[in-house]
Image (tube, rainbow, N blue to C red; front, side):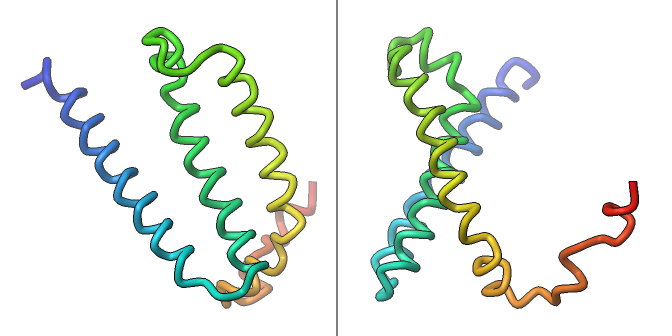
Length: 110
């Protein structure tokens, strides 16, 4: 059991991540507004790249991802994060979280 536990957990994680990406793909097809589709597509791409980055060492060693592709992927994720950051206020407002719940006063008092 202990020898297979990590493998089983990795398989379960991969299965869940695949289902998430597939659900996100279906969600994108249902969006009508081009700007909403662009922002959500950016967020989903960031998530997908983050999944790949977590196990990037494995993918590099196995030859599934080249060194230059890995470097480009990390640079791309940084660009996507900067792009998404420009929309963060709109994203937060769409979640209907009260403004006073988003910012903790003690965090600004350092």
